[in-house]
Length: 150
Image (cartoon, rainbow, N blue to C red; front, side):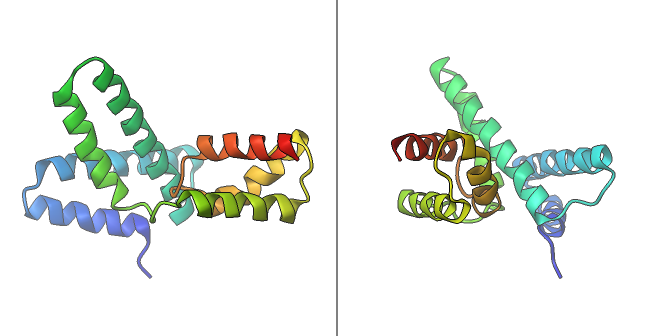
């Protein structure tokens, strides 16, 4: 069985052979983050854990793009966008707005959430299904809106 981590390692080897410097640099950054997490937790990461790391890495790139953009650093924006593209190759297909709303409704129904104090239960239900496929901060905002309006 091929894991996401193994796929990233295989892609690193391919990037080395093809002398793709930018791709190789990004993949090494990803693998370093995975290795650091494994050392910190003293366990081998599964695909869900690796997805969480990839999600965090892509979020960091999006924030950097925003900051570099407002500072007029187009050279750095281009570099971050390139790295973001490499990272997104490993993430599952993003959820669209309808799918996110449907997932939120399903979670609220399944957890029988009725107020903001149930927010944690709803997030716990959604996180494994949306990790790496949507911005969890945005989902959190939508859950808050749904729970306060109900």
